[in-house]
Image (cartoon, rainbow, N blue to C red; front, side, top):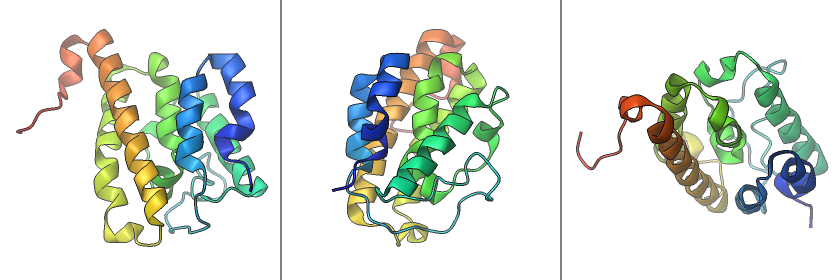
Amino acid sequence: MARSWAAGNAMQVTSRQGIGPTLALLATLLAGCSGAVVDGSAGAGSPTAHHGCVDDSKGCIDQRQASLRGLQADRTRSWIRQPASINSYATGVRLFAFKTEKSRLTCDELTIGRREADGAPGILRSPQASGLNPATVSRGLMFATEVGRELDREQQRRCAGGGGLRRSVSN
C-alpha cells in the first residue's frame, strides 16, 4: 500500500518542529484517500495548486509536500486570505499549515483560520463535495475539528477576548 503524505515526512517534520502526535493524526487523515478529486484547486502556479490531489501515490504525496512547504514559506501569508477549495479541506494541507504556523499567526489570522476550520463541515458535507469518498470526508471533518480547537486555544491564550470569535451554542 502506498504511504501517506504525513508518513513520508514524519521524520523530517518531527525533528524540525516536534509535532509527532500531529503527524500521526495527519497520517490517519490522509491514509486511504481515494483518487477522487473535486474541481476547485487554485491555478497551477500558486502554492495551493496541489491541494486537490487526495490519493496516496508518490506524485500526490510530493505535490502535497510542496504545497505545504509553499504555504509555510510565504512570509506574507497571503494564502490565509485566499478562499479555500473543497480539495484543500479534503487533503488537510491548508488546515495543517494553520496548525503548524499557529504560533506565528496574528490574532486576525487566527480568527480566519478558526472560521475556515469551523466552516469545513458545511463545505465537506455540501453537494460540491459529492465526488469525495465518505472516508475522506470523515477524516477532513475530524481534522478540521482538531485544528479549530487548537487555533481557538492559541487565540484565547494570546489575543484579548479570544479575538472576538467565541464558540457558542447560540449566536
